[in-house]
Length: 272
Image (cartoon, rainbow, N blue to C red):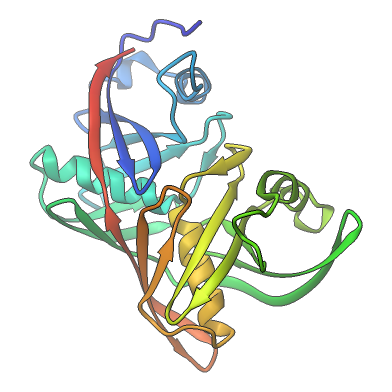
């Protein structure tokens, strides 16, 4: 049973990723010294509480229009969430803060633009790119590609993405000693045709497959681009059935000018 936090929230969804947004830009909640990790563990539980892929806390910023904090359902706070940023920007636009906003995150200050339901965000350049990692996972030898698009991601190309054991393989890779101590998010990509592909993602912190992952979609599109399978912009079909678009520039194996685009919407407002 959920605890009583006496906090107003907004439920926002971006391409199947759903988030609980707490607006503390005015600083009214500061005096309460809230434990957002505990709140996320409580409210993000599905079936018995609000249910979400994460908690987004929007705060004042001295460097940007506002600051976004991302807390996973397990209570851990992470540096970046692509769809979370899109949902935050959509909420901010609807709240009257503006349609072109700079947002402070632990991954840096990122720019956003909202037009109707469409939200485009400028991502940081991917880093720590490692292509063609051969790794034994259980009884299988896998070829994986690793990079950081704000948070760490692994990309694995598979033939049958629909029938693949995303939860089992994702958990095994996420907890593999090669990626210690922090672990990694894991993306399974297939059905590459033209400049499009399909993606399924196992998310660290959620510890399960989610219907979409913004940073994972960017990581996967970039890997496909580095392998020469696609050219920007890339359209990625997520498990929600909705699509995300990724723009990037590749020059001498360096990736820059990364943007993520897709729809977002407010589902409801409540108090928990």
